[in-house]
Length: 422
Image (tube, rainbow, N blue to C red; front, side):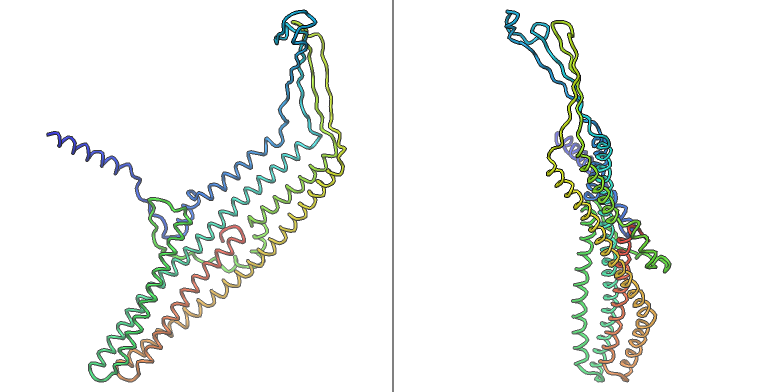
């Protein structure tokens, strides 16, 4: 009888554990689903956002006054003048002086420090945005490659089925005595080669899926839906080089980070130049004798900027840092414009190639294959013509798929340069 309650308890615990497991989430199908998931769940992008927030939090402390100082001086703690025992209580010794002091930077230094911290925060924010755009570009590219692999697998299976049909025709003709054994053997060799290519395509597809999962942060309890549809290409008006260059100059996150770095270097140079002037320290000191304040003292001190060689070196360093920041921005701008021009040219070539293959080469290859098959079945053509027509169809389909994938990759590269989706 004791086994029954124990069995019920085990079943209840198992059911509770099953309910505690999170439900499987299905994402993918379209690249927008992957991007939304990565934006909210990718750990590296979350780290970049946290760093940007941390840099922003440093702005206010950078311009704040330093904390005031309190100093206490106890006089004659041995009480030799009073002929008494040593003591540490101010009313029972010779006297005590309390000094309250506050350091005051020279005029404008606090604002410049705040500006330098603000520029660093802007740079961190731009780096965060650049990190996201780079991640989004990788997701778009791998999504397109995965779609290319799946489409290629579908075409390969169709081509394989077609070649099996051709092999069956060759065997039938050989069995009927109107064909040669060599045709049947060549068809079988072609099938084996195509099956090998299909296995390689399936492996590449699995690798692309693994790369996409890695780009999403390797989430648990998430199943990826195969890519269903490629993104539509933007209209030609949005692919004008002049318009894209203007958007690149305005929105590229790397250039935004360079601009923030230049601003920080400019403010840093001004701050270093302000170090030629002294900082001030103000203080007030009440002196306690027994139970009363017997006198008050005011203190005023400044640091004397005598180390001119050191300051000149700091100013020279600040100037060189500013020059380096400006030169680095120019270099990044040139590189971005070159990459934009290259990607735009590649997109145009891929678009023209797709049009030529889809509207000319592919339909012609299908007609040639159908004609060759019909002629081969009727004994008016040899097997080599069928094999050549079949290879032309395979090549046309492969070029079409590759051209469409190249378009998506080039589009992702252009969007990375301009800093936004088109």
